[in-house]
Image (cartoon, rainbow, N blue to C red; front, side):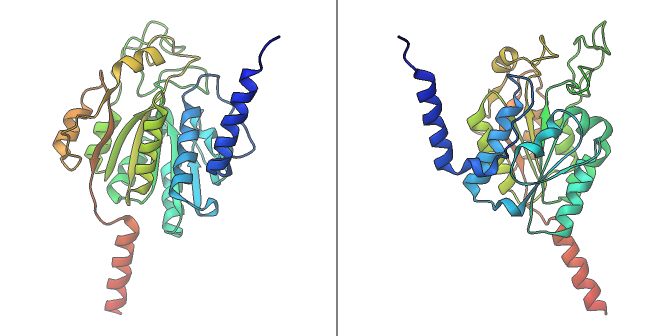
Length: 287
């Protein structure tokens, strides 16, 4: 006679989740990503963060573009806006500008964010829009069946690089640091507890927060950003790192062979809506 261990375990975990209140932030739609995809951990990370921070569900918006990552709004019980390819940040900026009281989280993949949407990141960063941008980097176009992306590794064979990808990948962290993002961090989907902590920190920051999340594509990448490879490559943030030191953050960001996990840089300065208030005050004073 077999012992029903698994149902008991599942029931216990379900009760734990229900008691935590985290299920309130999950929709009734189950994620439709490939089994083993790191994006499952990101959904859990965001719902954990919202629950821990006590963010009202009717006071938060998740904005996405196009791609595997952009299915995200369907799986959380928050307001959602599924936009056009690469247009996450302009729409998120508009939402936050219209209602500064909202918690606005943008989500997108490496293709959505750094190919067609690459022209928008610099402006959102320099304006210091008070939104959080979660960038899911699996180094490939997953939804459209495995083409090379802006962050694909050199030598990766895909449907658009059957003789290996000859191009060097972009360095998103260096780009965001140089653009003037006021919060830049990195996490790994294979370390869910740390990922949840980083999402919480990113949302808590007042200003433009960018969290780069490394995640395997278990279907179309069997050689590069796999769980085995990423698990051996990622490293902890040095204990003596000063997040206020931009040059130190850039030196850490330059190492893409052994990506560092944690907060690279943080700066406190007026947000876009703060500057609007200043303009309004000046206009009223001149009137």
